[in-house]
Image (cartoon, rainbow, N blue to C red; front, side):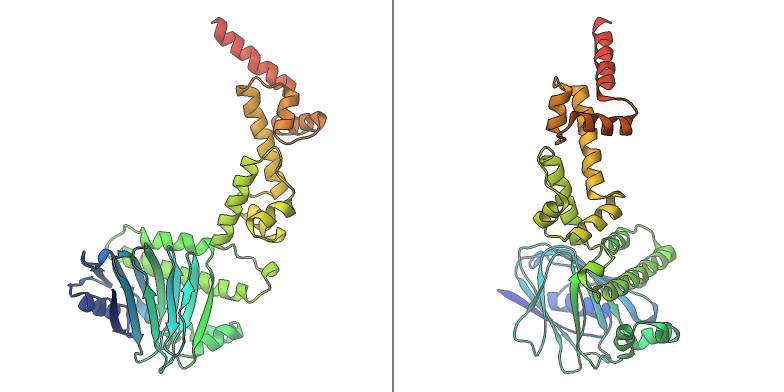
Length: 347
């Protein structure tokens, strides 16, 4: 079973209204926001839209469907540029002339624009959590905002925003950045009301747009020249941290670690610098010494045993690292710990 819904690509409010009609439910509207709840017959969750000045709109979706949904977004007066950020499970998109759907995976974003004869088609699978944040730019209205800046912009962006009527088809996809993920969370979790809410959300929408355009330009560079940290890269770096902590005694070098988590060495190093303000080797070294300190405090192991347990092959080198970090040798620290324990026991 599947559900088909058609909508005119006019503005974000019209998408909510058409969805409500297709689901045979009422939509709610307050100020510049429009909201529809998925009826129990079809699943659970909601779709919400936000309309701002100069043709900027946002669609936020968070739902779980009981049957596959097919959305056909038909041409409007102009064909807007859509910036889609997938925060959860995969869904699928194609242009009408395409034979196959393209998958948009978790943490991927797509910048897409159709042509007057080539409508958007979206396939949303059932029984999987869907959470999508989408920016919509009516480039004809947005031209008033950006016109004076266009001559100074990158040629790729000039071509993209000069196409105010959406004559040319455009498709770009990649994983979105950690910064964009943070901004989307700030947008969706806003608890302000009235005028302050509208101003805050509009500001966040522009921040997300700006970050996405910067990422698009960054992605035009070779992979080893890119400077923006993607959300999926963060997950790979967190996986590297888990490996370091779980395999501290035998963890390999940076090249081996990068290979295991699917990153090149430069990306892994840059990620550690951005997230932890340190290199990979410095992180491993610090974690070894911190773990050794915990073992001196809580275990019955001697210093030599602890040295090897944290993956250091030289006791003298271990002592040097420990003293550099804590200002005291491991033996002196162990004596302090034992004396403290004896004092508490005698008391």
